[in-house]
Image (tube, rainbow over the protein chains, first blue to last red):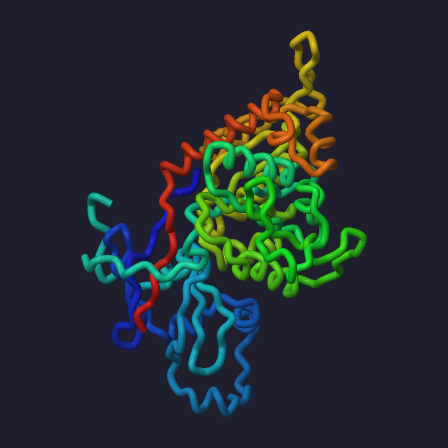
Length: 113
Length: 271
């Protein structure tokens, strides 16, 4: 059978990133910049596999947006969250496993969990 | 530790348990199982709805003796045999092919699930098409699924695809409530059983993934005859051995639900 799943209890904006309190007592924090750069959508995944293009011209919207920050973040079923970013990108669905993996641990899991 | 965030508003607030009847493979009898299980649950006094999520090949209309429905005369969901029903077959003629790409399928599944006023239901059973595609993903991403029941036949060729269905639900964190093995055996008048489609596959799959084996449904020509005639066997012949198998299945499902939370929704994000 699958391993016991890790479930989020609370998610909130904290500073320049996302703080998640998990059911096993762990608290993680992930900068928005990290989440944006690790967008799991097929397009971003494909772009990351290519060599960096120094000649890429940013769109007006990207220039105007500034540092990445979420406009909206909603649950997708029981397994993920979808983030709509200030640069207009919104196709990334971040699974709970990915959110946990991308987070830096602030509080460890409790011994009883 | 801070207290958990308040649970978000759920779609389908009146539905206590939303259960998908699924299988990776086609032709195992999902629609027959879904229709008869829904009726069996109703016979146990449960308030039940049945949503036919097979856009390309809807089965609910013929199984319940219905055709296209004029919504100006009969509102959705349609009530028949004590159930509330919704199907693509109510809006598209049976002799018309639905030739749609994925996004339209997803849109239609969402519309049929969320637009009809289902009201207060103990169970809303969703009869999924075979596979692990748009209908399954739409349901998993947007509906508060209590869980999925996997239907398989005994043969390994069916199990291979059933495992894919199980894997899909595990990826999207939808609990597998149990396995039903359909067309398990043919019972002969002298009491012996033939196993033309193999033996033991359902129990084997249930043991593999650590979920309850909910039971076997034997082969009987009357099952399809009743389905074709528009009155599922559980209602037409409630004392038939197959109907009794479905009643036992319904009891097993009700018992499993006592162990499941009614709301497994993820918390909202405080931005």
